[in-house]
Length: 113
Image (cartoon, rainbow, N blue to C red; front, side, top):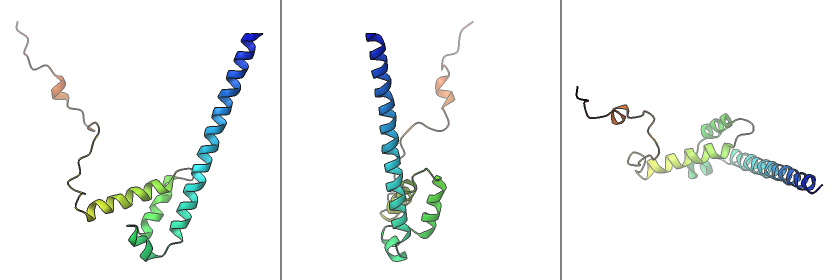
């Protein structure tokens, strides 16, 4: 019987954790939608001050219904900010290259016969 109680309590805790994550995800989604709606209500001058345009707001809908449009908008604003301050071209990207360096993986020594 103690094994059953431990398994049951573990299952209940797991289900509670999943439900908690879903509630947090829904809350974040709702807040993102409210923020997006507030941006849509702004006039052109205010959007320009933020480094945004109406087309940026339209493009943000490409994130899908359950996506976060504010992430797309924030990326656009930071891109424009980088271009304004001259950092757009000098910025180094980090991360693995898209095309692997095959030549580096090959052995540089020629086997002798």
